[in-house]
Length: 392
Image (cartoon, rainbow, N blue to C red; front, top):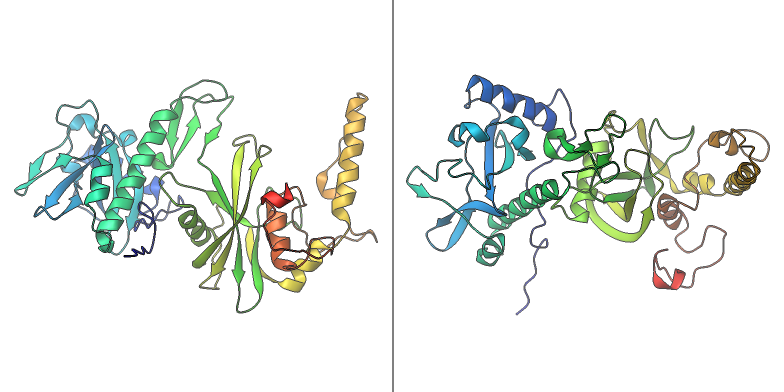
């Protein structure tokens, strides 16, 4: 008998995670401020509704349904003891606008009571996540969703427990964005701590276009792929879909792995990452750019992208950088702006360009623009991603 699941177990989280937005009541930072206000004012029954999932020693609170299934033990703020009702203790899990609810998790390990173990005639217990996994009816989408939420919550809490101190300077870390991120408390360091990174080229198959974006920190005229951080307890495919929707408003269907790349040259706040690259196929086409994340995002035709890949500036930039290394070795460092390296041979500015061959973004883009060729025009004998063994 073959059992086919729509998603892997612990994937398929039904809660929507949002980008911080002061005007959105369901976003993490705004929801956290509202939560703190309600705790201070002792007002718990307002919109949106806040639901909390306690964990103890890695076990989520749960209850049995007639001995045949189970459900998570969501409780309200009013059921928590005063000692636990500090805003910094809560970690944001996501929201469900249709249910008018924001969901949180909290670690009550070491607390004698911490919450009401029985209300409404229902008994609750902290249950091993593996036990809940085996007890889940895999054809029940709601139960599978509950399992994914519990897995996401545990991953977040465990991540917080093992990232108490900054790996750069050793100072304590503090939660940011309602616990979705952490940052060093040392003012001279302030390194941000994130999980791994997905990077994706979003493709409009029907119109033969690719979605490229630009950020304010990019050199002028450079466009690249979308990218974002993977939430603890989130699958790679889920991260691709969530980040694309958050940053551009575009829904993604199929997600196909391309390759991965260590990236130890990121910004100072997050210098070393593993970039995991994907093709993502769009289900919707209307762009709604999140200006907190991006400067712009636009669809580009295959011909436009090919023109951005076929000029000689990558080599020019390489030789300029090599000359700079030589100057540095001689003790004479010549200041030079990277953006001045990207001009066409005639001396005119190229209308747009994409990152050079050193970046995984380049290979995602070029493998779509030239599906049967390398960037130098030579024929490929097989369509293997750049990270495959034959290319090492």
